[in-house]
Image (cartoon, rainbow, N blue to C red; front, side, top):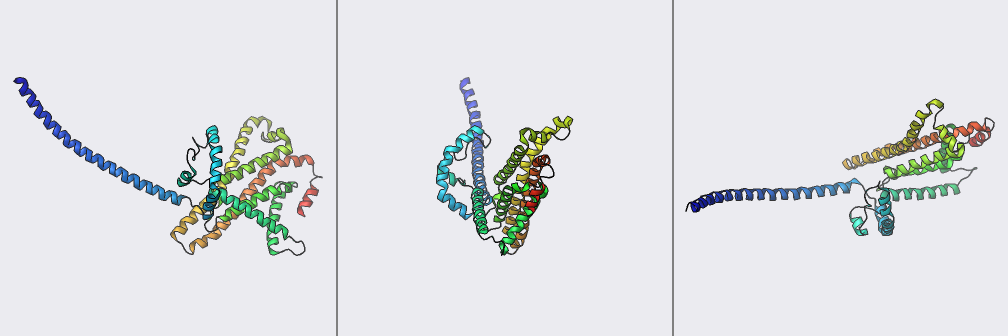
Length: 339
């Protein structure tokens, strides 16, 4: 009887605690459902905001979309065979290629382009440069030069003068490389002023490739003209006992030129496009047209800086060979360059 009464009393207490726990559990459940609903709403809003941000983050020109529609599937199939082993071997681009295990349709739906905007833009610039230069070359006339030819010759004479001043009497042999840099960079910069187009140099991959080309070329010139030992001797500095200190400094300084050339060009062109785009979104009329002279100035100035620095680097590694040739051998190339 005592045991029955004890069980009954504890049963009432347990029932009361159970009812209280149930009420708390129901409230907690409602709170959990509320939190879950809030989480879903926040996630939905976050995804929507991310989608809008991604949509406005990078504008894809119409011509880039069409080229990807035409050639993208073929390029994607080629990338699917080549890129995964490269990503797996190098480990510097990421754990895996973004398109690994995806179909072409899923890859495009994720916002990726098999042929990126900067690649399409740079190929268009190269095509335009070849067509324009071929046209100008066919119309050259020493007796009756046109206005286009005279304008073209101003640029050639400017590059020629800088090569002679910065590299030396034999600097004209580097004219094809420097002039190619000038034409491609200038056209790439100016293409950003066209409607529905993005300057290729507003992408760091393009400017890094240009900087690496300049870096490899002037080191090639140094090795070709001075030999491998002579080129590395140049990195040791003029004072023998400071060579252990100067050599690592010179190596770091030379490698830093890659970043200096690439980041300067990229940062200025990208920044100019972003500022112009932001202002155009706020004020759609008149003001964007007023900013175009600033874009033109930036394009010209950044082209000038890139080629002048490249010529300075070439002059650094090639002036030793000029010293060995002596004074008498330098006058004839100088006269030829002047003419």
